[in-house]
Image 1 (cartoon, rainbow, N blue to C red):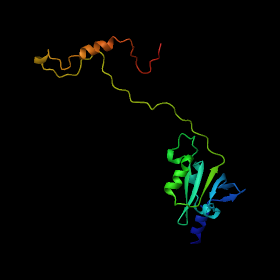
Image 2: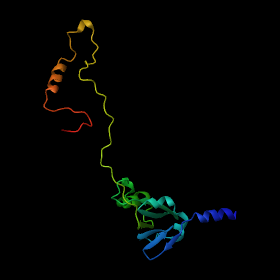
Image 3: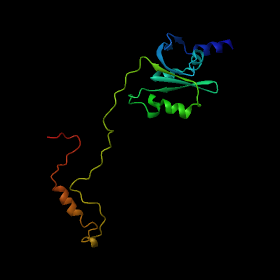
Image 4: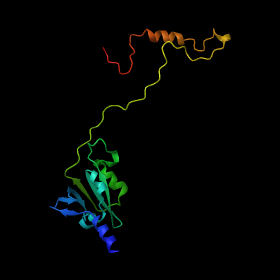
Length: 176
């Protein structure tokens, strides 16, 4: 039984308080941005902190029913973050998911990961299959009804489209 306790102790986070505002958690430096109602508790952070939170720019710890829970947030300028994970939505999180008037704290990571480059290109679409320009329309006509055109203006539209002043070019063809 002693062996199990040693294993759980080794999985705990190591919290070191450097100044009133600067701490380290597992050798990563954080700045204590807000400590509402003295929500910051070094011992409970050591017990409950998870390394999954290392990827976030901000870590929020809030108290409910004598339990500390964590939520990670990203900087607002990060294109890879969702709207619910941006730090500007912290107040919404506190109102919607935390107990009214609960104690909480906000930690900001000192050395944040660099922002990922946002891909400004539109997602590529699958190209449509085109019919050859000389192909006949797909109409099922009986030999008896050859004079009856189900779309009497279709041939006129085709003529108008072909005489337009715009040149149709294939995808990937450079403009000249």
